[in-house]
Image 1 (cartoon, rainbow over the protein chains, first blue to last red):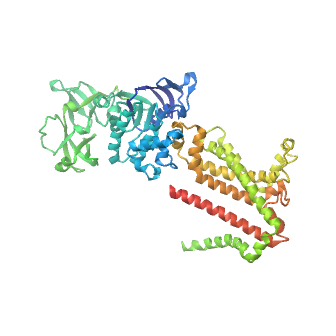
Image 2: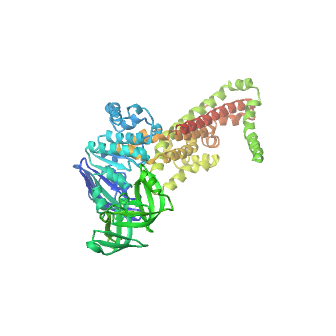
Image 3: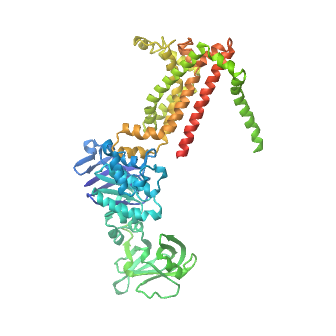
Length: 356
Length: 257
C-alpha cells in the first residue's frame, strides 16, 4: 500500500491531497497541465519536499515532516518513469536498464528484461537511435529492474505518436498489473487514465476533485469541470419541468433538449460526442433520439479511425462519427446538419454547485 | 555581401600573418638547431610540467565545485560565480601582486605557509600556484555551463534508481558533460601554458626552476632571437593542437547528438 497525504505550495495555489494505492492497483491522476500532477509524483519519489505531510509504502515511512523523516530518493525504492523517459544518453539500452542493479546481476537481468519487452535486439543501441516506443519500454524496464516497492509514471504515453500509443497503452496496463506493486500514474488525457487506471482521480489546482472508476466519472461527473475533462460536451441552459416527468432545458443561444434527470434553474447539459448522431437538415431521425439541434459544421478532423466533427449550435459541441458515416452525409465545414441524441444520454448538472 | 569579404580578408591576414612569420622568418633547420640549446628545452619541459600539474589541481577541485554551482540554487550563488570569474578580467601583473600580497613571504598567509615548511617564491610550486590562479576560472566557467546544460531528469532518474549524489555525479553527470569539461580543460591548459605576468612577478624567472617557456622567450628575444623564435614555434604548435582537439571534441559531440 502506497499512502500519501501532503500539503504544499505550488506557485499561486496549494497542493493538498490524500490518497492510497493498493498493491497491484494503478491509480491514475488526470488533470490539465499545471494542476500539480507531476509534483505529486516528485513528492512521492523524494525529488521535491512538501511543506507538510506523510508518505509511506508498505511498512516503510518515506516522509514524515512532523517527525523529521525524509528519505533521499535513492533509499525509497520507487521506480520512476519520467515524462520524456530521461534515458541516460551515454549508455546503451541494456546499460540503462542495468544502471540501478548490483554488478553481479546487472548484465543478466538487464538483458532478461529487454527480452521480455521485445527489445533483445536493441540491447546495444543508444537512446538517440531508439524509436519513441522503444524508449518508453526501456524506461519502463529500467524502473522495474530495481524491483521497486512502488511505481510512479509521469505521462508514460504522451511522448508517443498516436499509432504507437494504443499498443503501448495495452502493454503498459498488463505490465502494471503483473508488477504487483502500487502504481501511481499521472496524465492530462482522460482516455489514457481510463485505459490504465483501475481508479481515476481528476485533479484541478492541486486537489483531487473526484475519485472513482473511469466509468463512474464519465457517467456521474460531480462537476462541469470533471464532465468537461472526461471529454463530454457541456452546454449551458435553463431547466424546467417538461412533459412525462422529463426535464426540458432551454439552451443559451437557442435550442431545446430533454433529459430524464430532475433539475431546475441554470444547468450544464453534458453528452458524450460518441452518443451524438448527425443527419441531413430537414430529415427526421428514424431512431429513438429525442434531442435534435440544427447545427452548423465548423470542423472535420480525423482522429485515428474516427472523425471528430466540431459543431456550433450556436454553443460549441462535438460529435464523433465513423469515416463512412461522414462520407455518406457529406459533412463539410460550413454545411448544416441535425445533431441528435437520446434523452437518456443527456446528463444535467445544476450550475451553482459547480461553479467554484 | 561582397563588400563584407574585404574586412574579413583584412582580419584574416592581420591575425594569421604574425603566427606564420614565426615559422617563415628563419629556415626550419635553424629553428630546430636553436631548440637543442639545453636552456630552451628545460623551459619547455618546465612549462609542460607546471601546466599539467595546475590542470590536474583545477580539474580535481573545479569539477565538483562547478557541479555544485550548476545544480544547486543557494543564497549568494551569483556572488560566488562572479568572484571566481574575477581572475578572468584581472590584468596578469595585478594577479602577480595579488598573489604576493596573499601568499608571498610577507603576504597575509605568508607566515603560515612558511611555518608549514613550504616556499612558493622562486620555487616551481609558486609557478603552479600562479598558473592555477589565472587558469582555473576558464575551466570553472566552462564546466559550470556544461553541467548546467544537462537534463536535470537524468540526475533525478539516477537518484530514483538507487544512486547516491556522489555516484550520480560520477556515473551520469561527468560522462554526459565530458565534451564541455574537455573544452574547459583545454582552455585552462592553453591559458596556463601562455602565462607570463603573474608567474614573473610571483615566482620569478630562475632558469630551470621558475623560468617557463614564455619567460624564456622574453629573456632571449634581445640576445638570442633565434632561440626565442624556436620556443615560440613550439608554443604555437601546442596551442594549435589544443584548439584543434577542442574543435574535434565539440564536433564529435555534436555528431553524436
